[in-house]
Image 1 (spheres, rainbow, N blue to C red):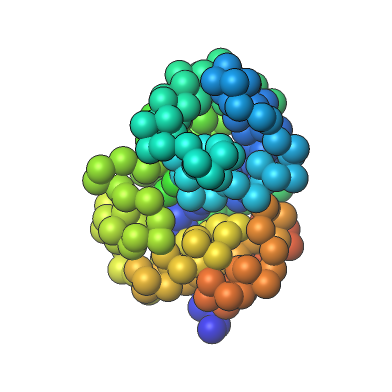
Image 2: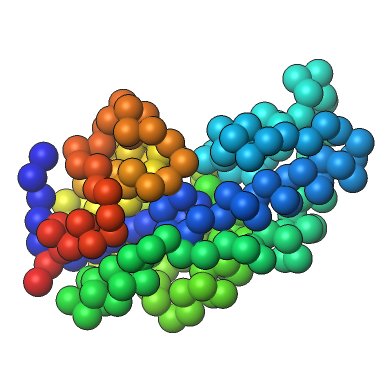
Length: 219
C-alpha cells in the first residue's frame, strides 16, 4: 500500500512514542510482591504488555487466580501508577523531532492507547504537553484495541477521513485496529513486538526510525 500526504496521525503509546518497559517492570513486580505473588523478568513482562493493564496482570498472575483476585491486583497496579508508572519512561530517539515536524506541517495528532485512560493522559501530559489534539486511553467510550470504535471516534475528532489518517504502533493489535478502522497501518520496529507480528496484523510498512514516517505526511 502506498499512501502519502496523510493529514492525521494517531499513535500508540507504550513501545511507540515512549519506552515505558522499565517502569512497567518495576510497577508490575512491586504490585505482585505486595499481593504475595512471584515476580517476573523484564523479558516476560515485555511479552505481557499490549492489551491493557488488566490483561498484563492476568498474564502475570498464576493461571488459577480468580477474576476477583485479578481485579484486586489491577486496582493496586493503578494505585501505584502515579508514583512508579513513568519515573524512568522516556521518548524514543527521534520521536520529539518527528512530532514537531508533523505539527509544523499542519498535521492533526492523537494518541490512542490500551493503557487505562487516566494513566495515558498523565504520561502524555508529562512528556508531550500541548502536542496532541486528542488523547485517549482504554475506557468505556474507547474500548481496548483491536476494537475499532476508539480509533473511529478519534479520526472523527481530528476532522479527517480514515483515508487521510495513519495509525502508528508497535504491535499486531495496532495494525489490526488500523485495518479495521480503514486507516493506514504504519508499524514501527523499535517497540516490543516483532516485525513478523506487525506483518501478521496487517502492516503495510514498517519503519526503523521515527523520521521515516515523514514520507507519509502532508507537506
